[in-house]
Image 1 (cartoon, rainbow, N blue to C red):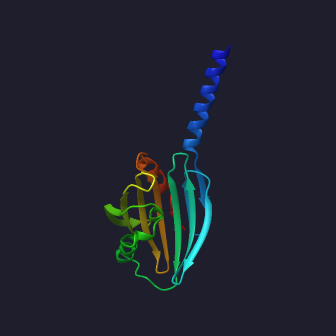
Image 2: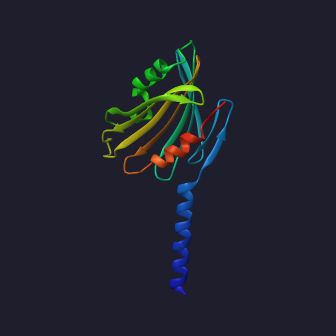
Image 3: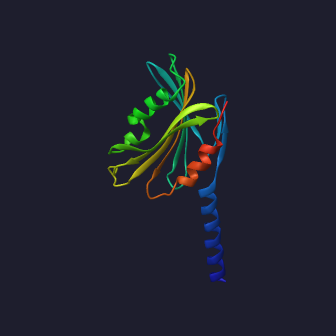
Length: 174
């Protein structure tokens, strides 16, 4: 009886763990809709030239997914020069909270739902706790005053590529 109970408890723990790892949360507002990897939190911040509306979730494996809607106070070109500008100035990303240097790799440019974007994969040097981090990010120029950054940050030991594909494919710009 004790063995059966132990097996049942292990099986339930396994099912609960698998559910926690695959939980998704659809989210929608006036700017976009997307399906995140967990519960979504909201924050905002601004500086003299823009305001940012940030939507974040983090999986049980530590994979952070973010959509940042940036509204700028001046017109920007609706082309790759603007998306490249943001990629080249990615020093203010969440990865800056860790020690190390961002190095862009796998840079690509294309259109997403008719909007120009620049994509980059950033490898991260070891953080202060020895963890290696990576970031996948797409800088989408929606119009002359709105930019959407969709990105995912993960510990490098987590294979997050499929999770990224699932996340970015659900983004719908409104």
